[in-house]
Amino acid sequence: MPSDKISAATRRYVATRAKNYCEYCQCPENVSTQSFTVEHIKPRKDGGENIVENLAWSCFGCNSHKHTKTVAINPKTNLQVSLFHPRQQNWTDHFY
Image (cartoon, rainbow, N blue to C red; front, side, top):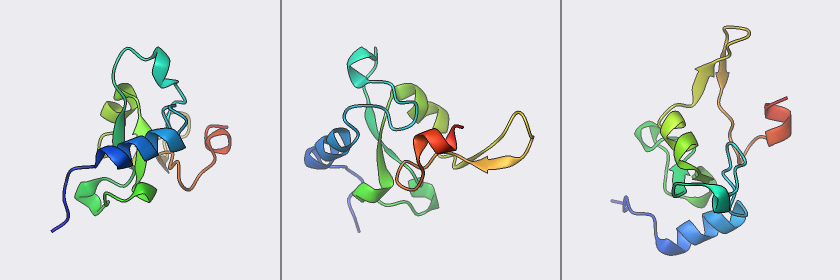
């Protein structure tokens, strides 16, 4: 059975890959009042794994808001849309 714990080396890799910015809101870690964390893009409850392709560097606000969600309702269209996926989507294009 795979470990639930994400290693310190993996945490450093994910943070470095993100240039120490939240991969969801683009907030720089050095101005945040709370710690950043490794977040599962595809939630573990939905089969998401502890592999670097499924991990994102996330501020506390984005991590707690996204939690295990992968979709949300667009307030302008009332349609269900996928949440930003930092490994598959371009930030600027997604939030255009």
